[in-house]
Every structure is written in structure tokens, then in C-alpha cells.
Image 1 (tube, rainbow, N blue to C red):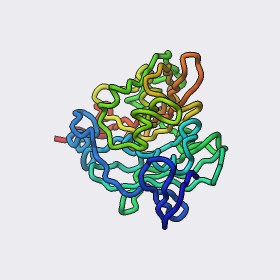
Image 2: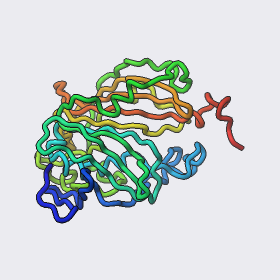
Image 3: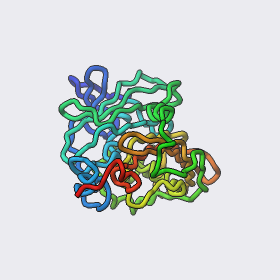
Image 4: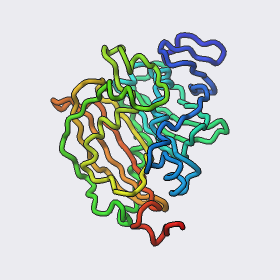
Length: 310
């Protein structure tokens, strides 16, 4: 664990990630208020109107809002090597709403562990877990939470929204480049360490936050045919695994995606796809595993079980 010194239960790390609290064998951020920066985007579950139409209390904050904050505890626990060969898997089990006060928790890794996986979570002030997951460094023996979930996929034969999608399909490779000038205008909560993402990092130029890696690696995922007109979809689970990181801004990469599984649950159909971010010569830099949940209530294909409300 990269700790400079400890004063009471507040941990001060060598990285500029703000206050980290050590408590009962875990590392925590302080509680902070979540902001729904996409609340005005029409037709998505982040807007109050769409969210209420499909059964939520209000606009659901994107899971990336939590992913943006993960490096604070991951750097405190694993050090900067996490951006090279680390990873996380997060399952979004309860909706996060605008104004929720939450904190991120990480089971404290062993000092100097080269290959290790620990528990990761996001909890509200009342103790309710909104996100459960795992974080890792190197090549631990156990499967991540997301990989375990894929093995439990069921109900593919019941799919209507995703009917006809071919599991095992791999897209063509497409070029991708994370443009730092464009991403600087993307709405987001403050991220740390901020200078790594904007000016310089220990690897030289600015690097991409792990929140941007799924979009870069998954640029090719449109070729899987998972986007369905009029159906409200939301992120169910996200894994990011660095193989030869970090991922740099303003650098040319290649993306390819593969449909890993589809399934059905009482309220949604869901898809799993793996996306890979590679150097043009084929060197694997990072890969992601993404579960998207396609809400049955928003699809006319499920009108017999979810009739439209007046």
C-alpha cells in the first residue's frame, strides 16, 4: 500500500487524490455528493422523464460517475502500477440518484502484493451498497466479479429485444483516438489526480481516466447490433483490465469487440460484450467487459407483459 504517513485514521498518500480514510481493514474516500451531469439529456435513463417512465424515482446517475472516482482508492491501495496491469469490475446493483451522498470502499490490499484481488464497493450514508465489485493488480487466480456473472448468464432463448444476435460474433477492427481537447469539454465530476489527465503523468503525457477506457475500447461495439431504437438501456456492470497500460490521450489505437453472452431477467434483457484496445501492431493495451441492460418496459416487444401506461 502506498502510504506516506498516517494521522489517526486519515491516510495521506504520495498521490494527489485527496483524503483517504483507513477504517476496519478498508480504505475509503470521504462521503461526497453525486451530481447527475447528464440530467438534461433527452431519451436516456439519466433524465427524470425517461427514468420515471420505466419505473425509477428519478434520473439515474451514470455508472461512470463512480468509475471516475475509483482511482482515489485504487492508487492508495495499489500505487501507480494499477494503471499498468490493474483492473476493476463493478456491478451497479442499486440506482444512484442526483444528490446521493456516497463513499467508495476498497478492502486494503496486502503490502507489496504483485497479484491480488480485493473487494470494492460504493455505499450511501445509510450503509446501502449501490455498487459491489472487485479490484485487482497483476494476474490473480480468482475470476473478477464480472467474469463470474457471465458464467451465470441464462434466459437467452427468452430474448425478444436481442433476438437474432449471435454470441461469439467479433467486429472488424476500427481506429480510435482519445482527443484530449474534445474530452476536456465532457461533463463530469472532478477527478483525481487531475494533473495526470490534463497535463503530465508519471508515464509522460496525460493519460485517460479509467472512465474513458470503455468508450475507447468499445468504439467498435456498435458493430454488434446491440443498440435498439426506442429501447431504454443502462449500464449493468463494467470491467476494465489493463494489460500494458496506461491508456494515453492523443494516441492512435485500434478497437475490436466480441459479443460474449445474452440473457433475460424479469425486468430486462442483457448483453455482455468484451472490447479490446490495441496498438496498431496488435499489442493488447486494455480490455473491457460490459453488461448493458435493455429494459423490457420500454420495448413494444414486451407490451404483453408490460402494457403502456395511460
